[in-house]
Image (cartoon, rainbow, N blue to C red):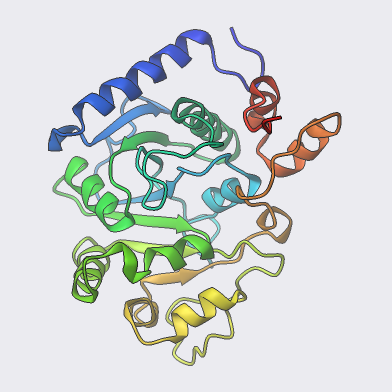
Length: 296
C-alpha cells in the first residue's frame, strides 16, 4: 500500500507502461485517445443525453484553482445540476512546448498527479464519475473531435470544456491555426456541430461575474485585460460568446489565486505552503518526489 497522496508502485508501473504503449501507437488514429483511469469500469455506460465536463489537465502541478474549476456545478443558477462525468485530459503534446521542456515534471509524474487530482475529485463531488485519458492532440478543438469520435453513441454528447482565462485566450490565438478560415471552421465544428461549450473562470482574486450571452455585454464582466479584449474584439470568440457558447463563471477568490505557473515552494515551510496551493492528495506526492526542486 502507499502512503497518503502516493500511488502504489504497481500503479506507477501500470501508468508508465500505458504511456509507453500510447506513445508507440499514436500513429494509429484509433488509438489516439486512451482512458487509463476511471472511477468505475462502466463510467461511460450512460444512456440518453450526456453532459461531460472536460478539464485539460496537462498543467504541472494541478492546483486548488484547477480543483475548484472542476468542482463547479454544470449550471451557474442550479447547484444541483451536475455533470454526468468528468474527463481529465493529459495531452502528450503541448502546442507551445512540444513534448516537454527542461524543468518540467516528467510525463509520468504529471500523469500520476492527474490521477491524484481525479481521486481528490472523487472525494469532493457528490456523485463522482471521473476518467483520466491520454491524447495526442495539442489543440482544444481537435481534442473535442477525438473525444466525440471515441465516445460516439446514438444519444447526444455535450462536452463542457473547463478553463481559465489564460487558457481560453490561447485557444483563440491565430498562430495555432493555418489561417483565420481554419480557426473559424474549427469553432463552427466545436460549438455548432459537436454542441460543445467553453466554461471560463478567471484565475484572479476578483473572479468573473458575467453571464454567457448577455445581450448588453460590453466586456466589463471580464476582469483580466486579455479576456476583456478577446471577448470585446471582433472575431470568433466574441461571436460565440454572444451566442451563449462561451460561459463566464465565478471561481472562489481564495482558490482562484493559485496558478500552476507559480513557483512550487520548497524548504521547511513547504508543507504549509503546498497545503494552500494544491489539493490534499498532491501535497505528499510533491514533498516525496521533490518534483520541482531547483537545480543547484
